[in-house]
Image (cartoon, rainbow, N blue to C red):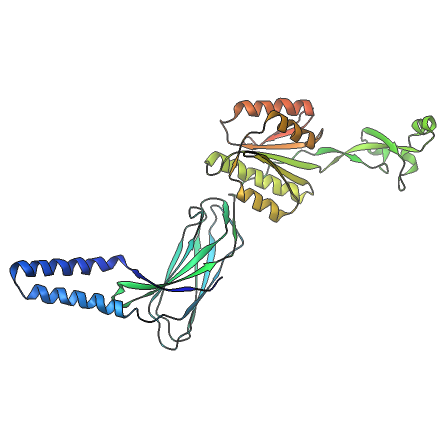
Length: 359
């Protein structure tokens, strides 16, 4: 947190009742020439003046806030405030608010009434809030209002909170990913029941039983036969949609859970988005993955040339996860399936959580 910005005097909405009441009494006294309306009006003015004079000194208060680094849409999280009065005498009643500066719709504001603190007293207040939408909260601030006598004014101190909070998509089940075909090195066991693959030059560490003797006799150089095996491989996810649309938020949640599961299985996760230009992000840590999915705002369908490039990067037997809002881009969805069939790529549709193997 940064240094506080003190000294702003704020008007409480309850001030307008005595002000309007005093104005009405003065008007009534002017018309009727009565004394008692003037007395009541002066009393109301005196209350407002006493409240304003009571704002003359700053209340020395320190506030420390504790927030989690990650929160999840729809799940409550705890906000912890530690308020310490550094003065020797009692403080005025305090109201503390935590406000999100940008993207206020993601996380609601939090406010609590502390009351009066004795000299050097410290209290801890906890409360919960429920995030409404995914995203990243870069900055927020604390507002500490010291309430004047009679409650007509407050003196506000503002403290900037620089802690970043990731608001992750709502929980969703991960799609069970099909295994993709990879290549086992030449020291594989030929009896493992795996299909033969490419022939390559012998390398130190390759077992003699994997030597391809026909090729060796023909070329005069030791060669070994590689064999295909089921391996983790990589996962390429393509996102299409707009942030805030419920259907898109649902598929992003599924894509996040699936990508996280793939990462835990040892896969490399690539996410492709397009908004004006193509962006491909290779996500190798859980922190980078979660932040990427929290930040996705808008993504457009890929062009045919870009889609073919993505399919080539998947490789034959690779896995492509398509996450787009349902009932939109139907033609593009069909083109993905047709081109994936030619490329031999396994396609998973996050809207139906169904995996289709294209060979």
